[in-house]
Amino acid sequence: MKFFVDTADVAEIRDLAATGLVDGITTNPSLVAKTGRSFLDVVQEICGIVDGPVSAEVTATDHETMLAEGRKLASLAENVCVKVPLTPDGLKTCKALTDEGTKVNVTLCFSSAQALLAAKAGATYISPFVGRLDDIGTDGMELIADIVQIYANYPEYSTEVLVASVRGPHHVVQAARLGADVATLPPAVLRALFKHPLTDRGLDAFLADWAKTGQSILGVSDDKQASRTSA
Ligand code: G3P
Image 1 (tube, rainbow, N blue to C red):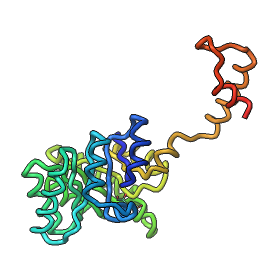
Image 2 (image 1 turned 90 degrees about the vertical axis):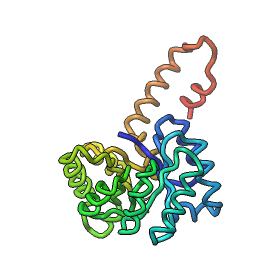
Image 3 (image 1 turned 180 degrees about the horizontal axis):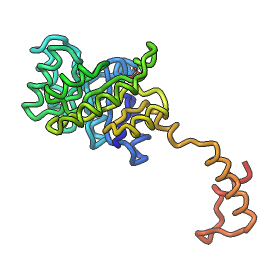
Image 4 (image 1 turned 120 degrees about the vertical axis):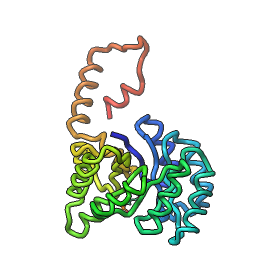
């Protein structure tokens, strides 16, 4: 399963990319607005940090302008994936960009019927928003299960299921159980995946016992280890 990070914050991306666990980045106009920076600069900078696909969203709503915006975004770097909304014009643009060899992420998907259309339009990724469905009292993960099943019925579709609007580790684990291809995680969710209180407690106990032995694996005093044990 691939992990993308859902942010336009370059400092966060640098930090998380260093874990070696980041396969790509997704942004949207709201995330870009939060940075207060130039969209094109941010996209270019992110593409230089991460080798995998970087989703950058068009902001026009008509096909001609979307296509022009998509082409401009795609020209910024080889790993740009153009994001288009799930509208008739968005899917027309998806088809045109896909035919030109550009990767396309179709976003704002809230139904299996929409996901079917995106696959037919040749989308590289379909982004169902599970958290926003949960917010209105619908089980977002049921939509993921449905799309994964539908796509499996048609091996000719190459569209990958990219679980978006992820709110916590539970969404990531359920997405993995269902065989979703990708989950795009807010930075806090990716960090939360590491955490378990028994891991922290177990490590503290191991380090305390190790300190009692007075040994050092590297044969030199390890100040970091000593200060962690005494904390
Ligand atoms: O980038 C699309 C999606 O992940 C947005 O999530 O939390 O704004 O519903 P959210």
